[in-house]
Length: 96
Image 1 (cartoon, one colour):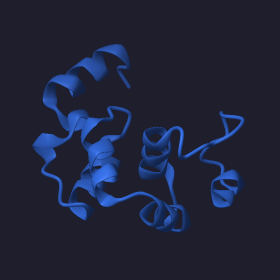
Image 2 (cartoon, helix red, strand yellow):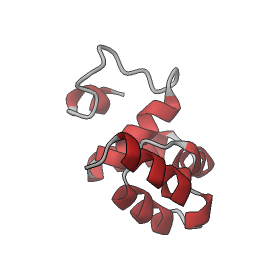
Image 3 (cartoon, one colour):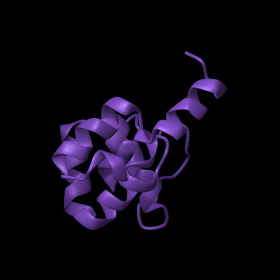
Image 4 (cartoon, helix red, strand yellow):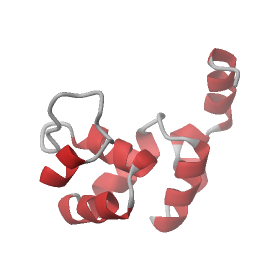
């Protein structure tokens, strides 16, 4: 947990508690983590937890979601943020 305090991944939260908010921590690491934090994530969460976050969370970028889908062997059609409907909706709300 100390490694999380030393990273800039959680600049916007006062205290990071991976046991209390595992989905939040996993999502941040999948999107912004470096090699060190990814290794920490793999030691502290099981692969099914990580795959579930990858599949269900919508906050991941297309680039991150595509990369992690290959790493964890999750079909792209099972990842919400890669869903065509969701991508159209995201562009209508944030057209950049």
